[in-house]
Length: 238
Image 1 (cartoon, rainbow, N blue to C red):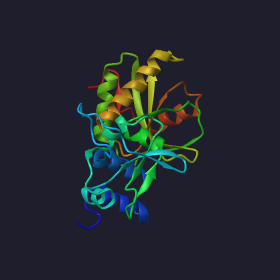
Image 2 (cartoon, rainbow, N blue to C red; image 1 turned 120 degrees about the horizontal axis):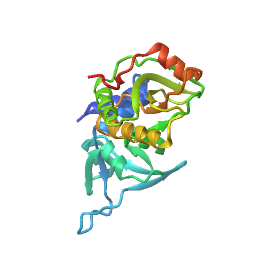
Image 3 (spheres, rainbow, N blue to C red; image 1 turned 90 degrees about the vertical axis):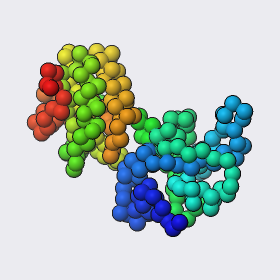
């Protein structure tokens, strides 16, 4: 079968030509199947070692985007098939992902990108220097999952959404959450972060997801969100 053989490979080809972004590739990797070679096979208990290969900036796990790419580069050896999200969950945090090593079209995903595949989030400190706007398309399913999660946290008053870019980092969805007390207790902030991580692990997001606890109106980030967005979750809203 010719390349590209599936939607993931179409995005991979688009990244090479500039027609697709790195964020779109991470999204496709997370939700589509990958073929992972197991050179040593599996032991009688079904356990197997991930195929780690050294690259210039550290160790990477090899994975292929289709049966055809796997067979072409790795031959007829033992392997497992699982989504990028499932593979990332098995990988130690220091490992990157080598996509299609030895094939015509492939690239490395650094360990930070693998963290996005497994649904990790970053907490952004209020007042950080960033560019703010609105996402081109509202991630309705993700917002529903987040609202359901926040409904179980009594400390959460409301939550708002923006698209943010911190420095030269890739853009990310920014979830701004206002709590009942200011300054918020650390426990409340940890609960919010855990709720966002759980929601993004269940529902795909087109971007990485960051969280920030909203303060008072003197904080520029809080002021922008309050002036330019509407809450997608508020206490008592049905």
